[in-house]
Length: 405
Image 1 (cartoon, rainbow, N blue to C red):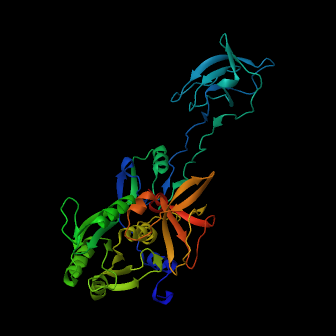
Image 2: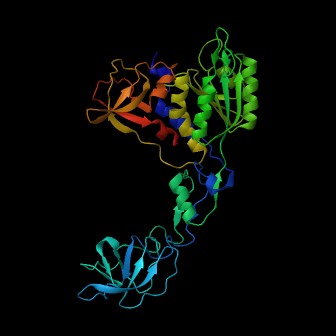
Image 3: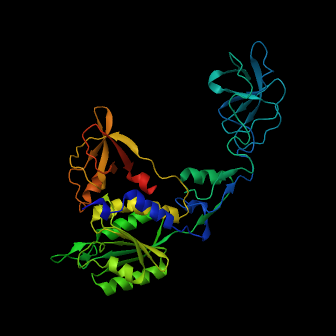
């Protein structure tokens, strides 16, 4: 095998991203249901956040010019969060709590821990400068500024920020509709008994879980027998209802692999076979404008190619403008003494060894072993034509970084 027969990972990703067509339909969803969705419009602040100066601590609010040489002031009021306090009486201090609005006439807050309360008076050893412990109006967001840009995938912190704007509904791109086709006469759904030669359909559930983490809507799941006519029919039906078709199996060169021929017959094939390990037999094309991503059939290869190839394409289709995840750089805790012409994604996990976090590889990297991915918490990336010895630095992607979950 030579690289002339394979497409590099980088070239394949560039082709897929250039082929991606972002969704054009939006919907309004309740804020509580917006986690993981992609914002479809810029959100601007309708008011200053916070709307008034407020205290950053529990303590006492006063005017810095008021304390005399004894640094002792009578306490004339009490201000809690949610109050609308009257102006501060000149020459006094007000008991104030975190988040409470600063009363007119006060210009600083001293922490409770730095004060002594005695006979209705508060005293302190040193006077803090003006503005101490005050969170200013508009400190977080000023009225009219863009709080969040279109294309932002909403995490819990974005939901909280949107709530601070007073919004209870959010404009988001509708979910990407994905059809899953798993191919193979040998596949049986869990819950049924196996006969000789049969296996359970693991890929369907791996793909469903990954697509759920990627905030897609699975609109169809079908197991397709190893026959050309059945493959053609399933692809046509899926193209009519989905924004994206993902298949597993049937993309290699065997006599029972029909995906490539079916796709070329009723659509267009623009990519086939990648310089990636695991996952070399991978296809990409389209049927009547609906993209088709044909993944390998081996379970670990399905996981890896979905995370590395399909996920960036899906994010682009969703309108997600976020930057791709950046890998951590970790010392290898394993040896790879046989270089490959393909870029290798090793199922690995982070462990603490001698006070240092290292990437440990699962001993068996067979593409059929899904248990290796359950043991692992990410992928260590080995560039083409590279060997690895313990201590060498490798790029490491956590599974959660690749899915955004």
